[in-house]
Image (cartoon, rainbow, N blue to C red):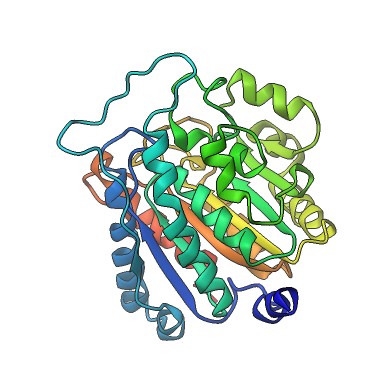
Length: 325
């Protein structure tokens, strides 16, 4: 039976801790409508491997399989165009059509016992990674770590950029061309979704969160309650959901732009390096059944010094098991 095969393939361990890691590169820029973010996937893969060699982590390096690159749609010869009409989503059809191969690659990696590590590229790639992760689980929980909610629809989005819509589509709201990506998977429930690090929400997103179905913690909540308590509460909620798999989506703009300027939608007041490292270590050390991880929105063109790429790679290495012990 399919359910028995899913249970066998989706083991009980947190795959951040051990086992193979399958990087899946998806150099997407159309969701952000910002050139340069398509360079992030290859830059991250290269920087991560170079760091593990330089720092002497052969066991972690050996966990990394050769990266798979899924072709992403391009704008063609014309420059990326940020103009839109009200209620329109930019490059909607092109992005939606590109997601099934990404979803299949993520699902295949998970079923093969690996951590599916999606390297972006902009955050619209989560349309594919969430669909792939949901296809391998009976009940998928989601941890969304981001400065932004990404729960807009074309009607609520001020920009019309699809990288602000993937979580909404996964939760069943938005145009059918996006929600249909999840038509054959078990539903992802708002109550199984936790959001951390929010500090730039659009009016429609605030209205949705006010419904109370999604648990979230803004940076102000983290300041008031404390980082460890906020993370522990998120882990407890995800564990209590009863989900057999957890997908973690980490948008690098959750970091303060003083630390990582190489991202396209910078908002001051984000996580420091130490706070982000603490968050990632707590997730890695938890008993959550984490099967898939997004690492998105690095734009090397916005930080030619390479500093942002180095920070992004170092934090990713920490998430995957690099320690200073």
